[in-house]
Image 1 (cartoon, rainbow, N blue to C red):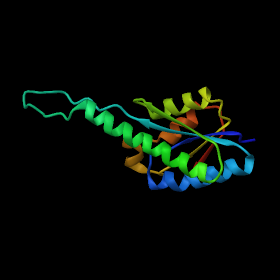
Image 2: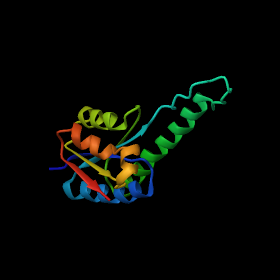
Image 3: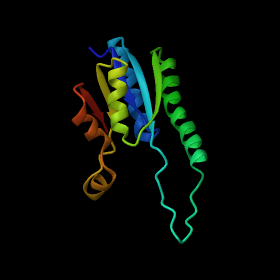
Image 4: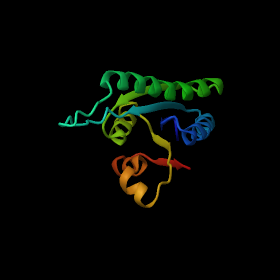
Length: 146
């Protein structure tokens, strides 16, 4: 049933806890995991007359890509220790949900399992919910863990 599970991770404690559940689900179904972490590009900051100093975009993206790789490698190491196959994917996208849905299709996944921070009120309005966007844009079953 769940032979190829896409697991988006942001490296948070919540994602780390969810990884254990994903690994167990893959083990029970004899499946494998595709772990994905998505880097959002450096936000554009316009340069005005005030001379706003902007950090080096290349340095930002290099450092964030290192973190993104660490996120998926941590999942792969835990899966390997449990005897579960795990592919890793890193991506850069302004809208992480789009990269997640695209990766699920590209890798032939039959389910997406992801953690949700469960933001409410204004935090949800301003920060958005990648989980809700994934739910709205995929036809695959999505298991949401908190």
